[in-house]
Image 1 (cartoon, rainbow, N blue to C red):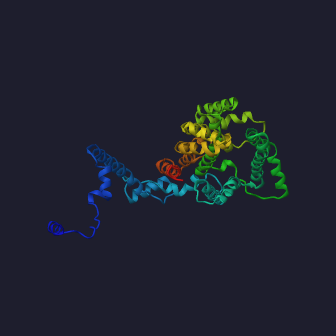
Image 2 (image 1 turned 45 degrees about the horizontal axis):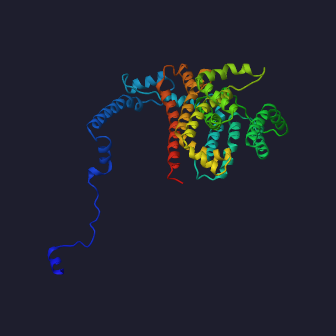
Image 3 (image 1 turned 120 degrees about the vertical axis):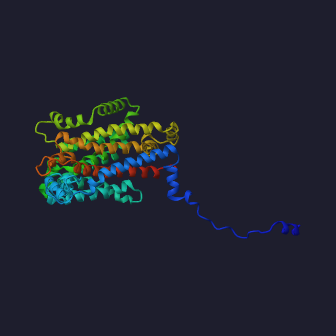
Length: 438
C-alpha cells in the first residue's frame, strides 16, 4: 500500500504557501472607485456629470478665492490693487474686509480692551461641557459644570460678583426644598415647591441680597451693557443658553404630555401646540415689543434675556415632541418591567424609560439644536446685531459699501464649524450607545 501511494503521489508540500496580496483591482483605492463610482453604466454617468459640475464650480470660484486681496483699507483700494497687479477683468475677493472688521464680526461693540473676558468665558465653557459630553472625564469635574454659568455670566456682563452668587443661591434653595419635602410630601409636591421657591426668591430677595453683600464686600469688574454685545458672540450666547435650558424643559413637557394627570397633561399640550404653532420671529417680536406691557411700570427687563427666554421656550416645544417620539418608540414591556421591579414613577423614568428614549431621540434632538443655533440670526429683526446685522452695518460704511460675498462666506464658515461639530458629536454618541456597547 505504501509503495502504491509513493508511486501515485509525486510531491507533497510540507509548508504553507506564503500569503500574497490581492490583485490591484481588488484592493485599495481602485476597489473603492470601482464599487462606489463605476459599478454600472448609470453610476458611471452620474460620476462623470458630478465631476463636471464640481470642476465647473471650482473653476469659477477658486480664482476669486485664490486671487483675494488681504491688505487694503477699503473696497475701492482693493479694486485699485487688483487692477494694478492682475487686471480689471480678473475676479478677486477683497478679504481685507475681514482683516479690518473681524473683531467687530466676532465681538460686536464689546470694549476692545475687555476681549479677554469673552475669550476666557469660552475656555470655561469648553472645560464645563467636557464632563457632560465625554465619559472618560472625571465626574468630579461636574462641579466646574455647575459653577460655570455663574462665572461666565459675571465675566461677560461684569458688575458685582455678588449678583450671580445671589442667583445661584436660588438653585440651592430649590434643591434643599426638594430634599426636605420629597420624603414627607412626595416627589410631585417637592418638585413643584422646588420650582416655585427659587422664582419667588429671585423676584423679591436676590436683588436686595446682592446689594447688601456688595456694600459689605465690594467685588466687581467693569460692567458691559447688553447693547454692546454683538457678532458671533451674541449668536453663541443666545444659542448655547437656549440649547442648555430647552433640553430639560422639553423633557419635562414630553413627560407632562404623556402624564395621566389631567391638569398637567392639558397644560403641556396647550404650551407645546401654542408655542410650536407660531413662527419664531413672531415670538421674538413679542419679546421685543409686547412683553414690557405685561410687566410692572419701571421694570427694566433686558432685551437679550427676553430673547433667550423666548428662544428657550420655542426650542423646548420642539424637543418635547422629539422626546415624546422616543418615549412612544419604547415597547410596552419596558414600562411593565419597571413596574415588575417595584420602581416608582420617577425611578422608572430616570433609570429605565428616559435613558432609552433619549438614545432613540438623539438625531432629532441634535437636529433641533442645529436649527436653533442657526435661527439666532433672526434677532437682527428686533435690533440685536448678530453677525448678519453687523455685516449690514459694515456694508453701510463708506469704506466697504458694495461688498457682500466675503462677509457672508466668513459668517457661513463660522456657523458651519459649530453645526458640523454638533453633528459629528451626535454620530459619536450614537455609535457609543449602540446595543453592542456596555
